[in-house]
Image (cartoon, rainbow, N blue to C red; front, side, top):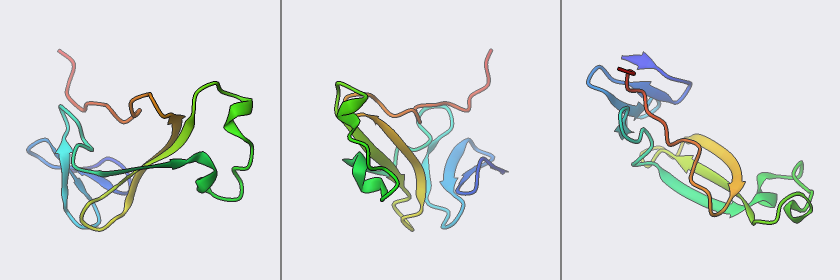
Length: 97
């Protein structure tokens, strides 16, 4: 097994699991966070440090997108993105050939 970050572990058989509770989240070669719970909220919900109106900087709606472990609710990823764009976490850990 290999620890990918504080909350994600890659198992010997190519699965990605929550380091905290061992819940299976996805596979390294397809979508490591396929089973994660996704929540989108207005970007201002990130806290008092985010107070600028995104409409000043972008023509599309900007959201706070978070991914959580379905087993223990640990936050796995957080991003600010246009609502109509896919997540940046569409990555693969497969080896290049």
